[in-house]
Image 1 (tube, rainbow, N blue to C red):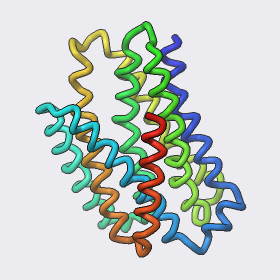
Image 2 (cartoon, one colour):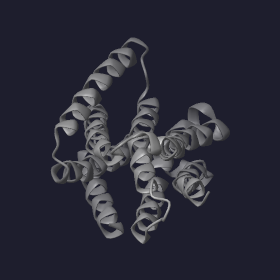
Image 3 (cartoon, rainbow, N blue to C red):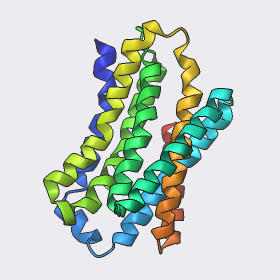
Image 4 (cartoon, one colour):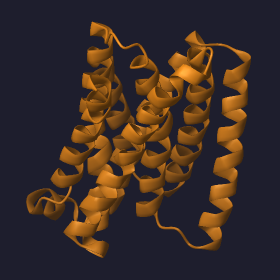
Length: 227
C-alpha cells in the first residue's frame, strides 16, 4: 500500500507548480513577456534533456537505441499533426511535459517494485517532486490569458497525472515481468529524444536565447544539487 501512496507524491510538486502558475502577481509579470516565459520553459526542457543524456550515457544498452528511435518517430508524427492543426506554443509545452512524465513515472515505478522501499527511493521521489514544481508552472502560466485560471491549472496538473498512473502500472505488472529494470534504458531513450525534439521546436520560436541558456544552467545546477 505504501508503494502506491508514494507513487502519487511527485504529482504534489506538479500541482503546486500548476497552481503557482495561475497566481495573479506572477501572471501580470509575464503577461506581456510571453517570449520570456517560453524561453524559461525551453531552458528547463534543455536541462531535462541534458540530465537524460547523462543517464543515457550511463545506461548504454540496445534497448536505449530502440527508445530513442520510438521517441523520434512519435515526435515527428506529433509535429506533423501539430502543424496541420496549428498547435500553439502553449500546448506544445503541455505535450512536452506530458511525454516527459510518462517515462519518469515508469522509472519511479521501477524503483518502487521492491516491497521494501529503500532510502534511495525516497530521495528519488523527493527530488522528482521538487523538479515537478517548475514543470507544472511552465504549463499552466502561459494558458491563463487564453483559457482562464481553472483550465490552466487543470492542464498543468493533468500533465503530471500520467506520472503516478505510469508508476502504478509498473508496480502492478512487475510480478509478471522477469526483468523490469531492463526497460529503464528504453524509457530514458524515449524521453531523451522526445524532449530534444520539443526543445528544438520551442527554440525556433524563442527570440531571447540568453534567457534559455541562463535558465538551463540554473535548472541543471538545481537538479544536480537534488542528485
